[in-house]
Image (cartoon, rainbow, N blue to C red; front, side):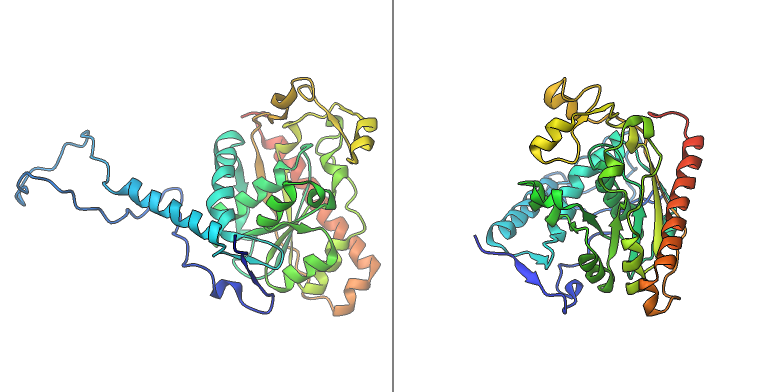
Length: 342
């Protein structure tokens, strides 16, 4: 199998990518129909003054639709087998992400968690930005849903490049999928490179302390580390966009932590929930909670001098500002929601 081509950082990857994706229909606006395929019929054509079909009549399905889908799928498979697709230096595979992974995650986003998104206008249409969000839910569904929200609902259909913990890249299978999705190691160097390229980068500073906290501490933000994400944003001059996610805390109510088992497998925690591990694989099914994702007003960083990234007091103040903004928004969203599931 041929290897995929790698795009060096110095080049503009968008100049080499395939043609622009079709514009997705937005709520309230009908999508432009495909050009109809002329039907082959033996009957003579109707005259111009023929009466239109009743509004309740069932229209015949468009001929050739399945043929085009099959041809598109076979073309996609051929490119995957022959290696005629592009990835960047981090392993991000845009074609696979859009056509396979996003298609698989979209029903979970739309039908299962029924995610409602607010504040998308706070994400720039182009250029670098750092989205900082709370982390919760025992398993990282929140990071995946955040990617779908930005890609499917932002006018520019941008890809969010998430920063992930090193454990993600040590797990067989998960490592490859994460790289294909555009995830990279949560370190200052990788984040700096992505921001300098004008990418949209996502980070969840709570890390394992947030995603693995007990259910009794839900929606109480943990420490945001030492503010490394603020330093990275300052060096790149990228705005910081606070993001609050409500609904993920209840998908796996963590009522206990088997620390001995966690140490045995090298995990930061081993969750015990009402369904896991008692129901086996069925216990991995998340509860169908109702989610809300809200993006706050961006905090600019380009007004600070270059040496500001080394000022510990400034980093502390900005980190605290981002954390307090997310926490306040979480409380506000919790007051507004009707129930966990509706």
